[in-house]
Length: 361
Image (cartoon, rainbow, N blue to C red; front, side):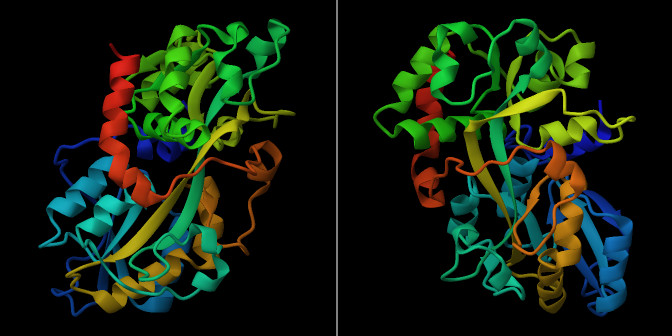
């Protein structure tokens, strides 16, 4: 499998609840131990930045960056909450809008209005009144399709939630478990945003009747069951529809020579739910000034333009240019489904419980 795809898309593969061991990379110790010259970033396993970009920040700021990776996105947030009284670092990156209220309710972050925030659309600033978190990137969870399958069967690929319950797509879709996977949860949230509190459960009953397959996480769905991915073809996956990311197609063609005319996978842009990732200055941070400088850096044009091909996400800053790989092969999602973080926080557990009783029973 393409290692960049694995790294970029594995961040949200499963929402864990355990206490994973922290893996450290970078150099230096705590900020207190070295006179405040080290700033520690806590994140999920898929945080990635080009060496040259990080070195430039270290040279300009005088800080050494230490990165602590603590599992997938859900596990990293849980770990940060459980260690809030004695934070593992200065900045946390990787809490998204599906988990944001949980972190804010636990007073995980100290307010800080980052430099460059004026370059970020207001719609992404979920905590604009207090600036406890700063939006860094966005990504869309969408159904991906295997172009070859639909061409061979002379069938138009689905483009919307409504299409997925049509008889011509029976037994073609694999998705992830909402209780164990953040892409799975995001897809469920997309259906709730689309059909509302009164309609989403009926939609899932129809989707179940139309043969949707549910697996534990993204890795199994995309790399084993989906027929359109390189790994899925090798594993003889037989599902031509999968819940994945709008950035999966450009990731599939990265490093492929010669460059293909189009990616082997496409995106049903009418099935997308937008995730927004945030960074925040951890309450009780030992190096608050270094933390502020690091958050400013995460919003800098240099870092924002590095993210698409290191983490396969879209920059939050409006002036950050996308690389050609994204513009040529990526899906343009103009009208994704969204839900307010407060509504997600209030209803998340009961939604998952209701979904499980419909789909898994």
